[in-house]
Image (cartoon, rainbow, N blue to C red; front, side, top):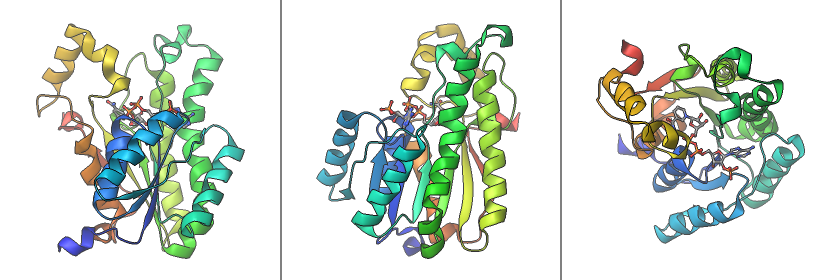
Length: 254
Ligand SMILES: NC(=O)c1ccc[n+]([C@@H]2O[C@H](COP(=O)([O-])OP(=O)(O)OC[C@H]3O[C@@H](n4cnc5c(N)ncnc54)[C@H](OP(=O)(O)O)[C@@H]3O)[C@@H](O)[C@H]2O)c1
């Protein structure tokens, strides 16, 4: 059974792999044996991730990419092809939810909306498209990191919720088009302790209301999203495609 989770010999690209959930997923995939390509815009953050993985005996290559730029995304997968022959796993994790996109719908301007959908949704599509040839040749898989905001509405987060519902839809439609060669799945995390939720956790009332609404009574650690990603990337999930796996401490069970 243990061998089913072994990712030795596979190459995994993780967007937004420099911090938070993406970093934890990159480290988790590396510890399961994959060669990992963490990617984000900040080269310094990526270098630290690669150093950490190598210190644990893993293999990693940092490639700086902006997922909103199709040329940058194409260059990423060209580099992965040159270095490792191609990608077996693509984790579309890069995501943003900036202040400019928060608040009542009347307050959100078009630029704020575009930024969120460009990173969270269009970026995932561009990466999947750029990796398509590798994934088909190698029988690979895609894992999209959505959110509970991809499953239910959340007030005052309209661009974010729209982008994550879109990512859930993209997961299902890619799964249909690319079966049976390529599996495409989605993880929908609940509230996780990362930079993205710093302000939210600093607001005691908001923090307490989220914890109270979460059956497991706490925010997740980023590492708790890594196990589900290893599962979906591995042969243990060989009959899983088009699935949305909530990793939310029971938040959407209410
Ligand atoms: N934290 C939560 O509670 C939570 C809950 C549900 C879902 N999620 C989702 O999980 C994912 C990761 O969230 P997180 O909390 O780990 O966020 P985070 O700590 O803010 O990290 C975001 C990552 O995305 C990268 N990124 C941002 N814009 C990018 C771009 N244009 N091109 C390439 N990379 C870009 C960032 O690196 P650079 O800035 O260097 O590019 C960073 O590596 C997101 O999709 C988020 O929506 C998070």
